Amino acid sequence: MLPNNDTVLKFRCQSKDDDLGDQTLNVGGEFNFSFHWHAFGGTVFYCHFYWGPKQQTFDIVNSDISNGCERTDIVTNHYDCFWMVQGDGFYFAGHNSPPAYVKKHIWD
Image 1 (cartoon, rainbow, N blue to C red):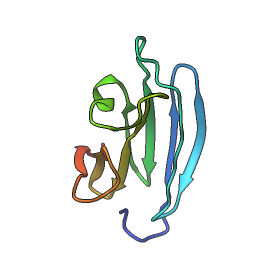
Image 2 (cartoon, rainbow, N blue to C red; image 1 turned 60 degrees about the vertical axis):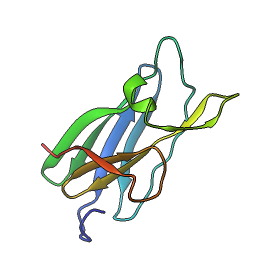
Image 3 (cartoon, rainbow, N blue to C red; image 1 turned 120 degrees about the vertical axis):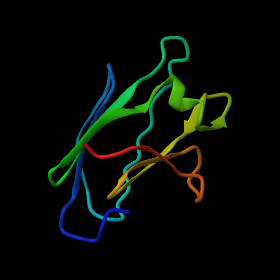
């Protein structure tokens, strides 16, 4: 988790077709969204994160990342992927239970 202080996490996530808008999270907050996975053309969502003077941009969903996600519905092609933001970086897991989270990115 991010240190418990007054600095909120700000971010914006989007794909070629969808812009999820500017978001703000306090410590312990959650953000969830759903989308339709395009199996042949691929789906890419990227986010730009801001936390005080730190920032980072990376894909949160793409064909490589989806391989690590948990497929929860074969009919609708639904996957669950989880990202956790901490003071030292960004952690990914295919399911939402420790110790599955693996550090993937650091803050710039």
